[in-house]
Length: 264
Image (cartoon, rainbow, N blue to C red):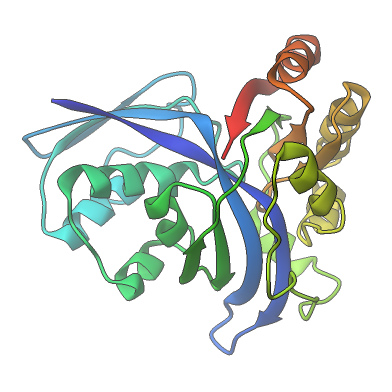
């Protein structure tokens, strides 16, 4: 039996740059991964069990992304998932779980197969700082300085399809062709202020608690507050770990999931 971590994925920026004939959207996103995530144990067998604070609503049959990924890999395993990340939440939980299992069994699937499973699978399989382009199939590693952060999920589901449908336009500008070399977290945070998440405005219109989470992060001293993915999880970036941990302690609310972390 082997234990694995499926880290939370955070879109530091997410630019929607086009829409394809098949309905998929072209994106340009700078992605980081947290030092918190779901936990999985993998052993011989053919069963999926789920426990943990966010186990409710996670299927254990063949519709689960873990089971689907194993089937595509031609593998069978007993997987025990300790679900510690909220879902759906814009932090790639299900995709990261499936990617962790694929890493555990050591199977290389084609990009086409990964994309058929989910657009976040290629970047979650890498599980480190990266630039994600196309519909998610083009992934390049990027060296990121460690970023002290706080993740906040305000406890509201946001349907991904409805968020994309609410976009004012789908031909937004991408990030610069050449990314800078950021010497430290302050330099990266400053650069990110000029980037954006194009899905944030429509998600905020659908789920006003996202506005509350972003405002709370800013009020707690975050140098930058932004939504990840299609929501509803938001993140704040801080000058140091002490500031992030202090903010996380102050941000607790009954319906919120709040976690201090380091992104990289």
